[in-house]
Image 1 (cartoon, rainbow, N blue to C red):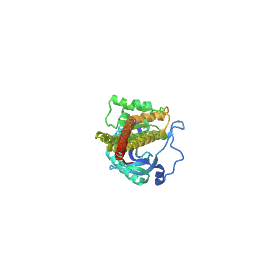
Image 2 (image 1 turned 45 degrees about the vertical axis):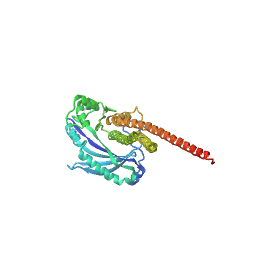
Image 3 (image 1 turned 90 degrees about the horizontal axis):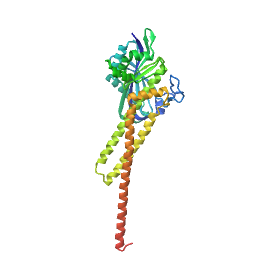
Image 4 (image 1 turned 120 degrees about the vertical axis):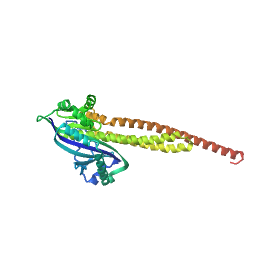
Length: 365
């Protein structure tokens, strides 16, 4: 029977503000700027790097009602996302034991409530660094199960052996299911796997991922990629909601009878729409460039695969479509405004001519 050692990393992500001012945050938390950015475990060119690494803060451990203690860390991203990471280690477990732990902690309501309370208290401390904080915070959770060691008869298993013999168990963990999956579903889960060497593996799903790697640095880099993918999903969800609300308001306004004065009101709404559109494009670009690498390197492929499984590209597509619709609607409203203004100017010219004619026929200059 296999013996597993590793840890659960429960990630709770909250969209807390339009921006977190990193320099101010460093002053509040009294954290020095690192001399160099986090590196990668595998060989990679120097331009494969994290562009703006988050600020990490060690916080007090979180204890559940059953007495489980989770060491905790908080990370703050400059584009307005705060992440709470809770960690739980395990040693010498078998596969059913790890599956049971996954079913117990992934998506657990108690853990979500504890995470929300801890995030709220942490944000009170760093409120001065939050630019335009949100009253309503969007939320995502994700679990990374890191396997540092999988022993079979005292020898470590390689990635191919792990998928071949324990693919069903890995699929259960990634799906967070306590029951075995069908062969079709198991194959669909394992299709999202990637390895750099015979001794490492990542299998990513929309709610959890399994990382098998004996090198802590490599495993940490993969966890960071998964975390960045989830922050992108959260940001695109936020942009989608903002654009949906503004577009709905404008469509309702356009359904009413136009009128000249109403067109003047619509131009204010159009300017507001365009400002939000430009802001979304700027923030979206900032989230996109959080990690920089070329598309043909290992980490880029791993990131794209994980982001696709999590659903970030789907929300990005929705946002892009709404940004395009917002641009077209803005141009339409501006044309309507110019037509209304031209009508008013023509009307004033006619009025002035009539007044001049009246004075002329009365014999006045």
